[in-house]
Image 1 (cartoon, rainbow, N blue to C red):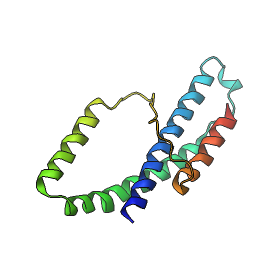
Image 2: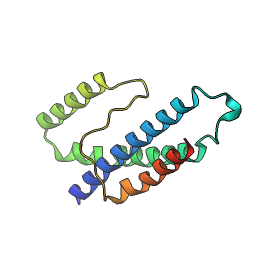
Image 3: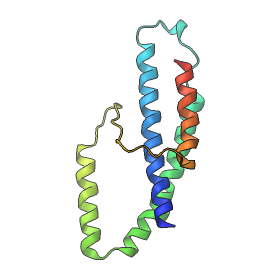
Image 4: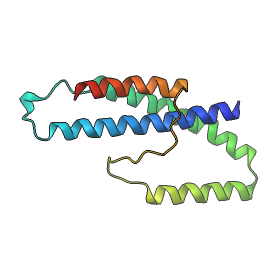
Length: 124
């Protein structure tokens, strides 16, 4: 069960990053167009992303992180916290997203997000 949950969370992280890339590309495609030439904005896709993020964060905060806290000894937990703090320090704050090399295709969580990506691509 832990492996399956981990795979799903990884797929969601990857899918979320892909959506952010597509939204960024969409915004870039609008830069040289006057507003009256803009297609419909991807409001539904942004709402879908918000919903996925809300569900994902809620699961991390209520299930994953408490499970890790209970499962790890003090040294392992401190090491994990240090790694997360280090990752956060270099995380980009602008919307340009770098995708990981491993693609979690074939996972239900990714498939759900892939539909959002396809709808954004269709708009630009």
